[in-house]
Image 1 (cartoon, rainbow, N blue to C red):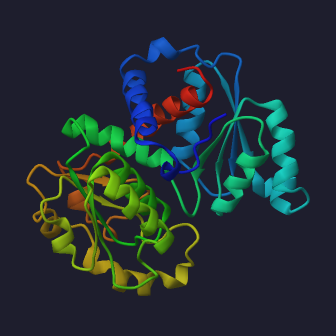
Image 2: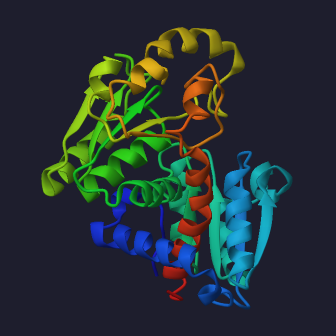
Length: 310
């Protein structure tokens, strides 16, 4: 039985399998309209969601299955009255596949150990694999391939999206530059970098952690950023974080250091005037809503593969 917890645990061929199927699902949705007929997806949420809930629920519905939304704030697991172990042992007797959007990555790992059915990481503090699969599908659509391209990421880099981009790029032969402040608070975790550098040696990717935004953007095919105020960050830290991260804001001047045909990506939600300016996210180089749509197709592919329905 396969789970999807992090791209670091996937082989390059497994990632390509997801991406190839996602492309086919998008182009031929009718072919998969009953692939999950009679099957049920359980969606466990600790964190707020727009794109994750909608894309997973619509994906399962469009493939003939059924999805159940389970908010842990109103559950025995969320109140501490029932353990993850007992919850998953029980739930996996009822459903065919489980996805979870959680705070702690250790909890998704525990879910996978306890479950009798495949488990998908729909976001933890460490990893966000489904987002990056949708991102890569979008890059392939716009650029034709991944290998040999350069992706440059800017801003707070101690987060699930940066970690997963690092894993995915180095697995598939993309170069990646991370532009962030010179502080452990904002840099990728060392345990991530240790794995990433090993992957890069295998694939030939080039990895840079830079503290000069213009240098990181130079020659990039893809410019990427993410929220400076994730859900877990207290509001009273906003002013300090904005001051620290503003040199890494994606604006027109920064885009000019990338290739002229570079695309702009943000996994959303986005705040104009913070991690990027309005003219960038709403401009002709932005592909953020294509990127958002492709979560639907990529997650269909993940479920089909894990359920053995591909």
